[in-house]
Image 1 (cartoon, rainbow, N blue to C red):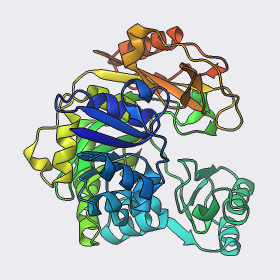
Image 2: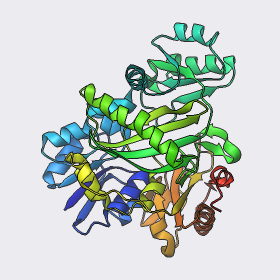
Image 3: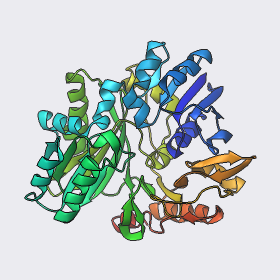
Image 4: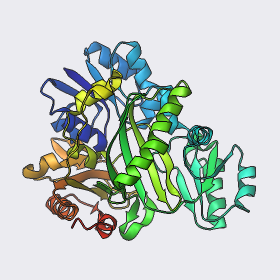
Length: 423
């Protein structure tokens, strides 16, 4: 089989490495891929958002199956365009990807179908929003409606910060058109949990839970990032909590999307907060999370491509989806200065013996050498019998990798370890 994976980050590298395990795979193309992915797939210099070029490539190269991984091409209708050419895909069509593409849509969906989430208000002009933040409860959460590279959410801990957030998003257009509308919602408290799930629109199969670390600095300080590391499973996500989420959140969401004529097939990401009032949805993503994928897929014992193809064919209930009981930790190595300004072009050295444990995100090939080209450069993932073991080994991997201007957090997994006896 000839497989095409759209995207070029650490998430896509993890997906490609897992798909490679299937013996029927002859060749994998990554569009555009990156310097690290080039070891595991043929990289093609086509942007993930260039839908016509992606379709042309798929048709002319007789692609048997496509995986559309990032949010942008999903929201833009990449799956729709490929399926029109009879190329089966993993990923939702545009009318279902709106669950991430519009915060207003997803909040209204949850309200309509009684899915637990934070109380909220929607604003279409800055004046009304500024008036609202003068009286709403503080802290509050302000979200750009559209896609914003995972950075369109601002937690305002003061009224001044709330005003600044409204002005930044709606007037200064920090996130472009994604900030034409905003959601201002109740600030929830409790442990956060990420749950990726396979769903074909009828059946939903949650994967192993995980815990992301969004802040740039140790002890959850600094700016929000795309994610500085993850552990799986999340110790706060007990069997009891999982059962409650399945009945109150996962199944109702799948049913709601189908009822709206927006059947969701692919990976649906549930960002949850375990509040004193029970689990609530913070956000939906219409795809695999990054870097959650880098700890979840290494724990998957079933064949990923088989599960993906069953999902696309609405036959998910017919395949086994099994995960290991082991634990995983991924530590992200970034360029110092991320998520704002940072230098790039430094050579990356990864010892051969740990190459299969590393997922490359922001790197390119320069005269045969792998050099940094992004903020999040790579993730080192370890799988062990205990969480403490996974954390220890992941940091050992980090210690063996080198590149100029490297930066990483030193406390990935600490919160999880403090909450568990699995040490």
